[in-house]
Amino acid sequence: MYEQFVEVVETVCVLTVIGLGVWEISADRMTLGQLLAFAAFIGYLNPPVRNLGQLGLTLTAATAGAQRLNEILDAEPSVADPTAPVRAWPVRGWVGFHGVSFRYPGATRESLDDVTFTAAPGELVLVTGASGAGKSTLSKVLTRFYDPSAGVITLDGVPLPDVPLDFLREQIALLPQETLILNDTIRENIECGSPGATDADIERVARSAAAHAFITALPEAYDTRIALGTATLSGGQLKRITIARAMLRAAPVLILDEPTAGLDSVAARQIVQPLRRLMSSRTTIMITHDLSLAPDADRILVVDEGRLVEAGSHAELVARGGMYARLAGPVPRVLEGRAEDTLVLRV
Image (tube, helix red, strand yellow):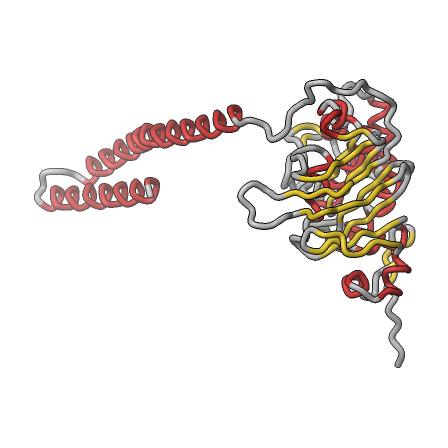
């Protein structure tokens, strides 16, 4: 309430000065010019006094921020590098979940419960299910943000706890649900996917992500500074920049967590072709509610309350008439970046 309190005090003081000035003028002890001059001097005095008061608030906020930062820096990571790590190898992209269970600290139930599946190099595995079913937890344990409480996850048959963290995360490109944009230039935002990349490489992936055209249309092109929530680019354009970043990383394993979340139908259609180019020749695990790409998936996994309840192709699961068929309904079919409804109305 500091700012509101200062406003009230200033208003009361101004009214007091005017009231006393009118009283003095009526008693012929002051002229109107003297009152105006005094009020002007008071007006010059107010801003420095207010700034001095604001300094105390700034110091308090800075102290609280520093304490929070120290808490983060002092926090122990939930996972650690292995004491006897395996040697680096040319990763092909075989991903395996073997009886994996996981419960978040403090949670009352399992977020994953005895999940078993494999994903082969070049395969698109789509994971779907109701909100809170545990889909996004799959990406967190695969990237070793957490370790499962039971079971084992493997990369090319090697258990993840035996793989150095830096090497593991170099082999996995994660496109999270939130559009993560740095407060920097477009060039730096793309290059952070592979630090040291050349301008030619950055332009190549931007073209593949259908981003080169709108980037070069900007006054400063790739040197345009952007930030999350910027009005310079739309949500779909920012998403394509993150796709270009993932393309530049060229990791054999790709995780897409709700890639069309937060986008309208037009923006979602615009990123379909860049997503397909990104998924090409990679082991891709797509976590999504949007089933427009479901017919293209090699396998669909349906998760419910942490358990894998259905698995199969789109046609198989629709014909089975289970949970997936209820989630899918009339699925729109995406062709060349355009969505076509499968619903036919007869008059």
